[in-house]
Image 1 (tube, rainbow, N blue to C red):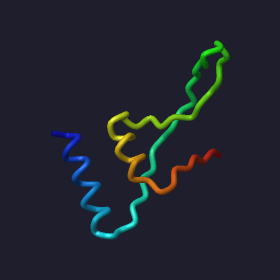
Image 2: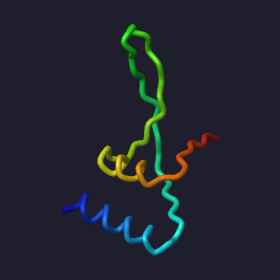
Image 3: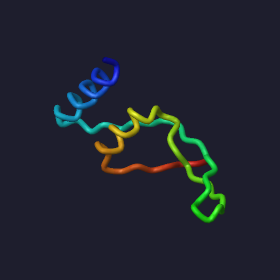
Image 4: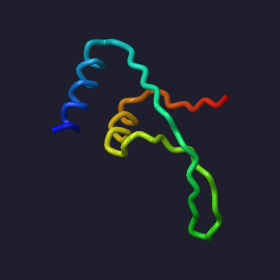
Length: 66
């Protein structure tokens, strides 16, 4: 029910022809590739379900650091 409400709320804002800017935090996470080499990737701290929906809606995704 929460996922549906979140989806419908954001979708209704977009359908009203408003520009929507969402800001959330990100973190560095270490991954290993198939050869065992470690690398860092910046990933959002937002829940995966919400992030998947927002990423499909987004025209631009950018990261900023101080």
